[in-house]
Amino acid sequence: MKYFVYGSKETEHLKNADEKMKALIERNGHIDREVYEDLFKCLVSSVVGQQISGRALETIVGRLEEKAGGITAKNIDGLSAEDIKNCGMSFRKANNIKNLSAKFLSGEINESEFANMADEEVVKKLIELDGIGRWTAEMALIFALNRPDVFSYGDFGICKGLTKLCGKEADKTLFEKYRQKFSPFGTVASFYLWALASEK
Image 1: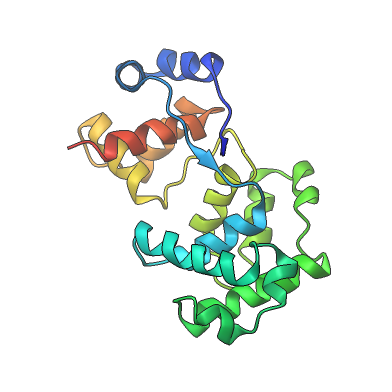
Image 2 (image 1 turned 90 degrees about the horizontal axis):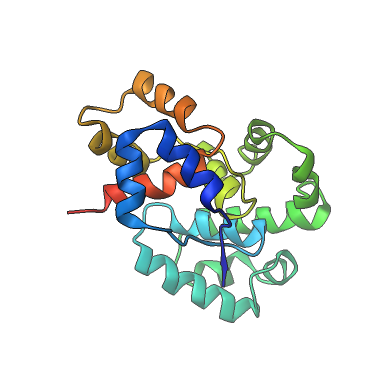
């Protein structure tokens, strides 16, 4: 199991940036967020997970992993779209996953190249893929590429957490203000806002 790596440098910056964030961090302590071993598996899980519950996602990804013998581009390429669909998803998702494996195998998408690309460049490259929108690309920045400063306006949980933190609606202007406040550690701020969003 692999976790996003951060420490006191990031949390101290966030605590100094905002008093309410400071209280949130002190209340929650260190939050462990599991990340993917590679970009391909992250993107496949994201495509599968669109508009379904977390439990359904786990079940379907588990079936796909078993059928393919592990979720790699090569293994998925060896399955038909029908095989993939029969794991419990639509033909559209199955075809998007097949296309994804082809792009990785051909080298059109090369994870190692992303190391020298800015976040926005990576997003632009990923959203060219079928079934990958901006939010999915931004989550890939966090959960596969371990980028430190991702703060996604398209994420319901982050917006909900920020609304609770501020006590007022997190519109685009407020969101941008806090994005700048929390930068360059927006990813860790996101972890705490997700935790706040899920509090009763």
